[in-house]
Length: 254
Image 1 (cartoon, rainbow, N blue to C red):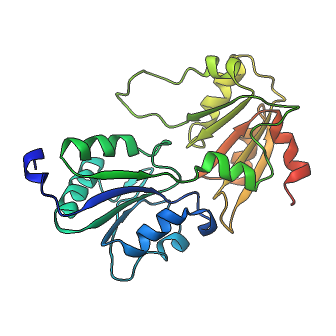
Image 2 (cartoon, rainbow, N blue to C red):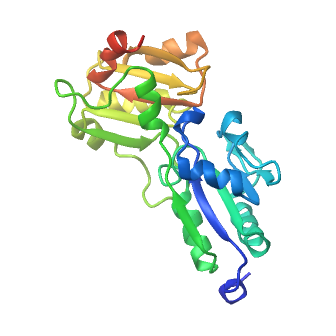
């Protein structure tokens, strides 16, 4: 479907961030769009409580991608968005967290613009901020950290550069927040230790952040991999590394 065919598109696509899971963290604008949408195409990590906000008259399509299980391939998702915008006024692409933070929202928006589809981004609260907050881990603190780096622990093949520069990250930031880092945790820990981080550096893992089932695993860089294996801790989870993790013992029971 080319740009010329889309000039008279009936509708508009909204890339909406669903936030990390707690329905109270959904933006007012995002909620209003879910309540008026004709079609909602949603990701795997969007919580059931958020999906309950969707209009009962809307068509709901699961486009979720989880490790090893893809409901729709990325190019098929984009094709579907273009198709649905032809016949519907409000098409919501509902993405966990924020569309532009490790959510491929930028890629989808590029493709929609190229196809001539009207598109708007509605930001959401990203899990890298919300999950640590709910666990009592402030990412910055006047006494412990004045810098934060957000990084993916799961890199795609054929991307703009071969690997995350863990050495630069270890040297350049007092707090490190890793998305999708559980499956590669052993490698990440090894690289950070090689880069000079102390074996005693605090690390916190937050699973299902902001949801009722949220759980945390707190440890040290040197032993966290063994603790994950022993406890059976699994994805999806946010990883936080740095001195601020120690505040979990003080702030985590609030």
